[in-house]
Image 1 (cartoon, rainbow, N blue to C red):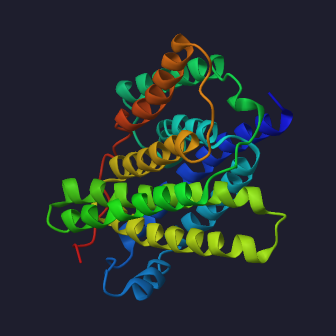
Image 2: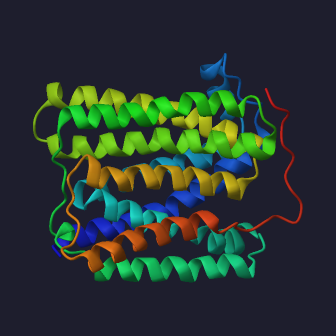
Length: 293
């Protein structure tokens, strides 16, 4: 495996850790800020910054974004997202050691399952870890990213008609899909960094819009739902959509042999599912949550 890909995977691990910090800080800030109103997205977004914790969370999350961009420019997108998906279980450690939240036995089991998935993945890399795989067909990219964004519309409508227990995760899925679409576009843009502004500008605009929409939706999901389920669903939706894009959009090869293919697919599934099913820590006293908009 080239050194550049190895560096990309290390940056992916750093992305996972820093993004979890950002999520936990943003959840604390979102609980203190006024409720997000869909009719006033700009005003609602600015109001979130009335909480210092939200501001800190955004700064941390922005650092995570830059790490993610660097990782995507160096390593295959499916490997980057698998490492980040596995890093979701760091939520248990970070919340326990840094935020004083209780970590259950089930959460530690999730850590072990994710480690097993990553070990299987590392053993079945085949040739996909030998280059960054950023080539794509424009039509395939447009259809894939457009489909991810379109799916969020009915999910948001459904979230508005349900209670917090379902509305929070539904909005989290919307945010994750928006960010997943943004990540796929970032990966596509990484192959054009030397091609000039005209080539990269349309991709940059798509990345900006998807990222900002995802930010507003994510903020509302953190206000409506509990922190851990919301973070888990957001991460799972983003990771599932970006991992799939490695095969669908960027033509990352599967390893030769049906056994290796089955193992790798199982590894991807195990990493993502273990992270998703890990319920995460629960605070002894839940923070106050603003009323729905």
